Length: 224
Image 1 (cartoon, helix red, strand yellow):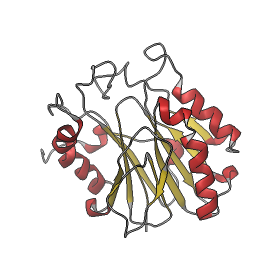
Image 2 (cartoon, rainbow, N blue to C red; image 1 turned 135 degrees about the vertical axis):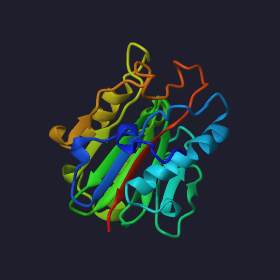
Image 3 (tube, rainbow, N blue to C red; image 1 turned 120 degrees about the horizontal axis):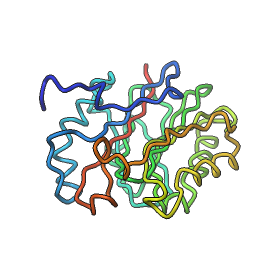
C-alpha cells in the first residue's frame, strides 16, 4: 500500500450521516489493484487498502467486522466477542462503540441505518434478492427489538448501486419504499443517486465488468 494514498479521494462520504458520534465511509475503486480474480482473492488484494481506510477513520482494523453475504435477508448483531466474519448474514448491527461494521458491494446497494437517539447502527447488503426478502424492514424491526430503536428516529442512507437502465430493477427505489412502509420518515431517507455501472472509473460493477471486478467497502461505526 502506498503511503501517499489519498484517503479523502478514495472515500465517499454522505452528509446525512455526518452525525455526532458516528463514523462512516465507502471505499471506492482502488487504482492500480488487479481485480480479475475470484472474490476471495480480490478481497485479499484489496485488504491493505480496506484495513487502511478503517484506520484512517479512527478505528482499529482488529475491531472490524464483515458478513458472509449470501444474498439473503438476515442481519446479525455484533459485539466485541463476535466472530469477525458473520456466516449467513447480509447485514450487521451494533450499539457498541469502537466496532466497525463493513459490507462489500459491487452493484448491490449498501444501506446505512443510524439511530442517533439510542446510539445504534446497522449496515446492509441489499441486492435484488435481499431487497425482495425485505432485508431493510427486517433490520429495522431487529433494531427496534434489540436496541429499542423507533423507526421514526432512524436516518437511512442508500449508497452507490446499479440502477436502471443498466439494471432492470430499481433496487434503491424499492429500499426507499420499504423504509417508508417500516416507519422511517421520508425526509430521513437519503439516496446518493450514483450508479456503479455508470461510473466504473470510480466504482466496481459486477454486471458491467462481467464478474471480473473488485469490491467496494461500506463502513459504519459508533465512536467512543
